[in-house]
Length: 150
Image (tube, rainbow, N blue to C red; front, side):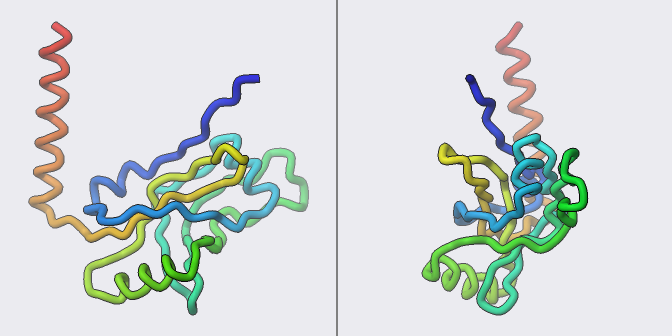
């Protein structure tokens, strides 16, 4: 049985932020949440990561209710704990306390063992002229691809 790969990306994050470091964190999920992720029913567009105490949480991560979940279904936009080791958590916490740094979720995927993982990044917000530069690079790449196909 060929299983399709689940990889849900946050495309807006690459446009809005300059990515500095990437980490892969586990997610503490309920049963109906993992089933919805396996059905590709998750959205990362408005999600962000924040520290509450010494734990890292992802907020506004939308995971749709599972269609066969009955009254056991989960709340769609609840805060979910991210599972990282202490050294990584401490490093991220010190960096985010500096001005201009934030933690952004980049993608959700299912690893080979069947666990849901969240790819997060330490990021710095881009200025407007940086965003324009990104759009110019993307447009020039599209034009070059079109010219090569002809």
